[in-house]
Length: 224
Image 1: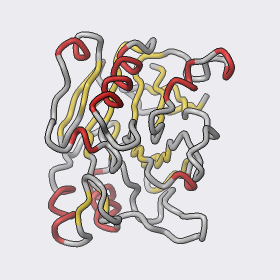
Image 2: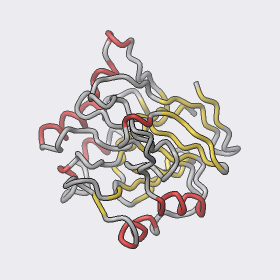
Image 3: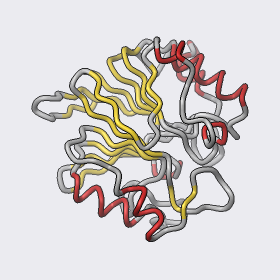
Image 4: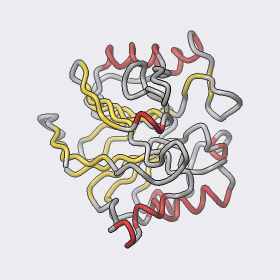
């Protein structure tokens, strides 16, 4: 099956489906968005994103919230009409679609006064303790420490406890965003770590969606 990963569109999602960019999003079986779909999560921003997301040419559309998505802090569900179009919103929860198990969580280490921020250490580790084994795809907004988490200054700012949990439960794919500069892919101990940030540090479109063919039975991955 064809899976496409994006993140950190910050209200500029439509650029991915415009003629000017040759409809670079394309189509496929599963589209995964790893958070920060809006600028500050206002009601109209959330609706504009969900209207666009639900109408993309993918059988299943899976997303989590990010630190900019304030609109999801108190509302952990989406309207039925979006679900009917194949949209799955994950909040410390899992969905299985076409044999692919996907778990999503919005939390990240405390960073100024943004949404879904938790202090490093025991509180954040408690959030990760809910991540189950046997996953094909783990979606978190923030990266794991040392895995596609470097800033423009070369600092690794990902979560150590998340990294340790991933080593424990061994998902085949971990996708995140949050640190725009760290867009890319890294393989480590059987897990593919993806940072799918679409925008650069100046919030301009720069990075292409990460696209792969994935076999749920053999767990084989071919990047396209």
